[in-house]
Image (cartoon, rainbow, N blue to C red):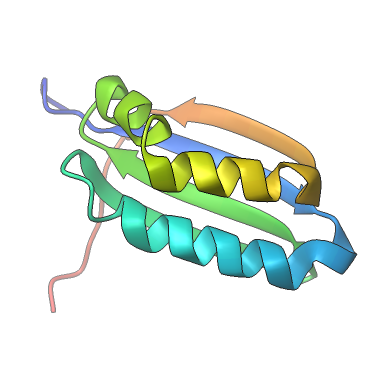
Length: 105
């Protein structure tokens, strides 16, 4: 991939079961605002079928600076402050694409 290779932030979260509904509302609000940011290409929120309290975030940004800009937004700060105690475990990874295979509709 060329110099325009996107920056991917993959995050696995284990949510405190009693806090799941509150967490879900907070992450959906954050994701909806995030995808409107100029440097954010995609912000997916998924949960594991066998463990709905295990959440996976797949975020695609233009570059690392766009991710840092995202983390400086008011909506991210609100999400982080609201949800920090709801997250039992967080593992974040920077990922690099080998290929994007998207079916045109």
